Amino acid sequence: MDQLAPKGIKANRLAGELTIQWADGHLSVYPFSLVRAACPCAECRGGHDNMRDTPDPEVFTRPREDSPATRMTSLEAVGAYALTITWEDGHHYGIYTWSFLRALCPCPICRGEAAQGDSAWPKTL
Image (cartoon, rainbow, N blue to C red; front, side, top):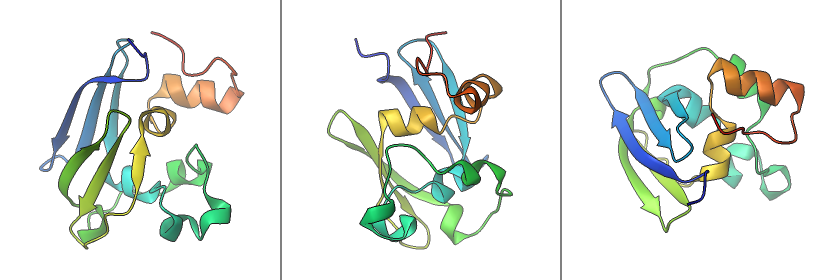
């Protein structure tokens, strides 16, 4: 089984959090505002030239916000490799691959490994 595949995904609209249990045992809890700030679509990234396989590091320093832009209305699988999210403001263009979401994990372990530029990241926990 691919270690970057999720075993479980839950969206808690009251808490404003997306939780992913990964196949390798790691648990990621994402504030909706972080997920929206990191939207990988061309519109949010400022064009196709700025699209990357990983989130921009600056998304981790943005304050949490509660607005129509950060309220999830639906979450759908894209094949067996990603999620797409519809936000209350109508935005629904980002395709969040499993590897992108794992790189977006805000936990101290993942942020420490990402900051160190660990080439083996993400590690199996």
